[in-house]
Length: 219
Image (cartoon, rainbow, N blue to C red; front, top):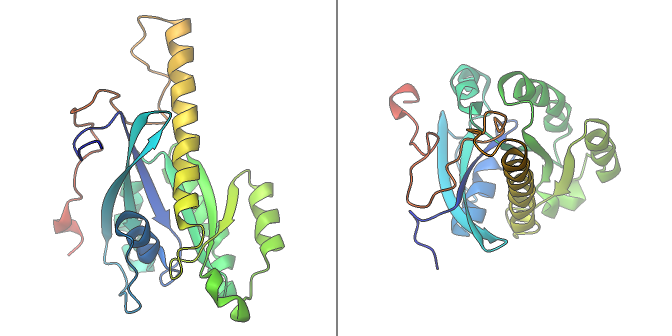
């Protein structure tokens, strides 16, 4: 099993969406298999990491949990930089959180790389008796905007693993294909066209994005 400091690719993923939709519990469920019923709102930005295997390559995911409160938006917008994937999360039992998805998507596309891979996540699928956002409605929205869609439950783990595995695999496929194309088109190229990702495919090397957030800005 690969050590934490050994990986082939580092992918920065951001979790965005309204406060209270379950972003922090999605993060803790995927990275530590934990769930906290009394989870408090994230202040500023937090992140955790986990490595997975794709095509015998070690993919290290650096997942950033951005606060959903309006007063922190100026802080969190800076953290879109370098992100190659995003999970845009809403609560299936709170239609207002779904209504704000369009605004979050616009903000993401304003601040992030234009090639970022996005998945719309309807969280808290365990609250099916309180559902206020039909799956078909969210699926139609995702298709219209060219993004993927999945429903999850951080509480009972439904589709959490699949949501992260799928987006990380998609990013890997895009990046590896670009590396093949760059190598074919220009063997001596420095990879100037691969702005989708901030990675160094060499193990034991610390990429630019492999840094902890400046917590002084978020206290």
